[in-house]
Image (cartoon, rainbow, N blue to C red; front, side, top):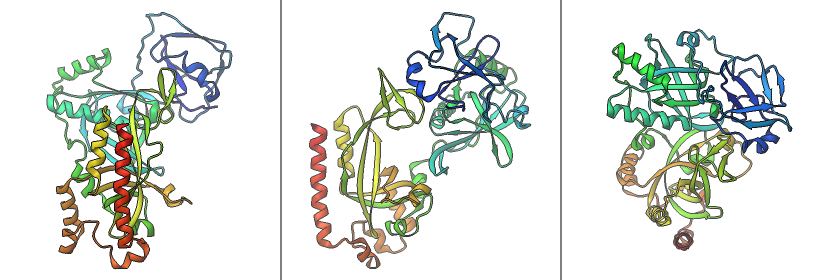
Length: 429
């Protein structure tokens, strides 16, 4: 039984408050088709108990548990709002009065940093930090993780162009600590973010903001998303040899060339538009195991490749969202064939202690010649290194380890060509 708030919890907003309801995992399939967010229902035959989890979804002293025979009936009731908020003050957050509860907050963005990727709990995730200000000029630090980062970042870029303020509502946010100062963040997928949603709450807030003369306040520290050059040049470089001898947890960039497509089995899958994870068919909709919600999906591809740099070879996994036309996908494969590439990928603690050969997942790849030249200028000290490409002779100290003789190299070249011809036929078919 899941007692934690989140996707299995149905947090309704009746006339006088909220109460959390939880459904056992084994009953999810039964009730998932019966309940839709934003609709009004009457529930009968359920179990009532006091919440025991450390972080509570509401301030209600009770919690509902669905049973096998719980009756769900959709009703019409205009008196119950589809979206309701219980806002807390910035002072209460700074004074740590909400640490045991999820809460709602409203404010406007005044500062924001770049989206960055960090290692957290052995996983590499996106992070966007920003500062919210309220109508009393109080400020609070905020952090959004993963899919939430893109939504706010796009709104910030649009607002910068239109020179308007960004009003943000976080529903079911949680207290977090940044440098020993209390702030807020999203609680995985249990939190909702509304950015200038044109709801009565943010319309009223925007009007008050305008009345005090702060409506068009400029957002500071707004570099936008990390540029591609920063993403590759500011990330630590690693070679295949370093990867095999003494890898560390973190994000790394490698200059290498694809020499072989190792696996094209299960190369296509339907991925969640929020997190790109593989989704499961659920009637006419899709269920995302990571988001724990019904989502929209788009075609994605994955391809395991063998890459080579001067020091040896290793395996990488490429993921990307497919274009509507398979011809576009074919064009993408053709652009990376027989070229130097920069790969950005992450190493987790799980990778370090794996008993199996690790295939590292690529987060970004580029064949930009100008960027590759900058990368070589930064990391290669000898002129000969800068002029050669990664398909040149392997370093003498690594010939034995790499097991890449000239004969083997020619064989791989032919194999590479055959593989890409196979990919062409597969995609066109």
